[in-house]
Image 1 (tube, helix red, strand yellow):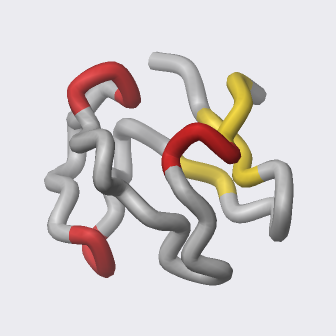
Image 2 (tube, rainbow, N blue to C red):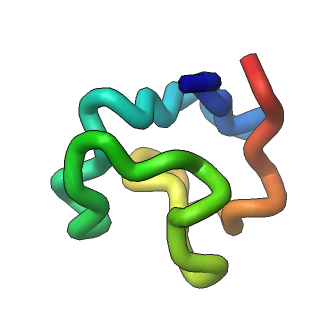
Length: 52
């Protein structure tokens, strides 16, 4: 599964780990992450992320 990086702060979303802060369980593909997802470090919108 592809990882995605926040272009504002560098946070990396790893699908294998999910994102506990945003209630995204491990194994969740980026495409399945809710559109209202926010970067847990800087609060950027999901559209600020790019494939790593």
